[in-house]
Length: 135
Image 1 (tube, rainbow, N blue to C red):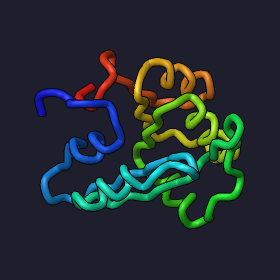
Image 2 (image 1 turned 180 degrees about the horizontal axis):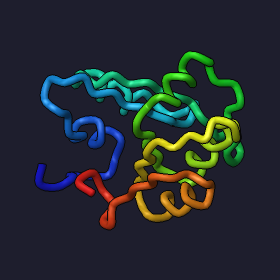
Image 3 (image 1 turned 120 degrees about the vertical axis):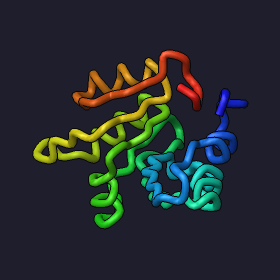
C-alpha cells in the first residue's frame, strides 16, 4: 500500500493491511452509537472483529460502565488495542481495574491520542509521525 486514500472508517476497513490468509484479530473499541461500518468492512475481508462499546455520546461523552464480561476478557487478551481519540483512551482506562496492570500495546491515531494514553498510565504506546493508515 503506497498511501492511505482518506481518513474515514470505510477506508480504514478497506485498506487495513491483512497478513495473507492468517487469522487476524482486531479489537474495535467504539462509541455505543457508532455505525457498524468499520466492523462490517473488516469482517467482510476476513478479519475476526471484537467490538467493545466503551462510551456513548449523548450530551458530551458518557463512559459505558457495563461491558459483557466475556467480551471484556477477550479485549484484555488482545495484543493491541487501537484508539482514535483521547476520550476512547479514558474510557478504556476506566474499564481497567488497577489490579489488572494491562500492559499490551496501544495503537493511537495520532500524537494527541498517544499523549492521552501515556498520561493515563498506559505503556507500549505507538502512534504515527504522519497520521493516516500508512503511519
